[in-house]
Image (cartoon, rainbow, N blue to C red):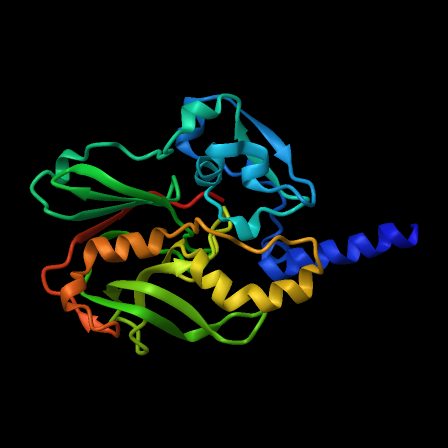
Length: 276
């Protein structure tokens, strides 16, 4: 192996390890199947170092990321993604129904379809927001059923997990709590919150939404050190699913910015099984 090739290989291994891709053994998002995949034709594209979503897909870059249930931090050389043959067909992409009759009487209602790895926010049964999500890994599935948002915390942090790359408590910004499991001695709580969204199951039971602002705050120095010029820093517009959903649920006039109870919060229905 030539020296230059060897160096590139080492850097690629570091990159995959730093994003969790090495642990998941997933190199191709094309191998993950969703029920909605059959609605349109797509091809599999292996990304090169230096590729960017906007450089490859122009104004449809956010739609391609949504279609792959991923954010820009995981848009890396060596990873294969799905690219629809007609990008106009995925404008404002969502696999969720635009209307949900069962929620027609609900002022606010949240549907999480794990089989599609997507969340939808409905007002009186009409879809108003939708975002890709990161769902639970094997052994840490998101609980099924109907729940209710009962607490919120704009700058929530995990008291169980740390960011393995940098050792800080895992950020759960724009957190919306929907379940506390009192059947377990430790009373673990489950939240919808901001995190990185890699395009495959990655959480420990919570539901993760886009939060690229957090990634800039938490990862920027680490990424500059590890990626050594191969990784382009995130720039605006940031993908902000967690923030937008939080602002939709929480009245800004009564938000103290810290953890607080939510009275009469939206119902949350979690259906489907995450892809494997």
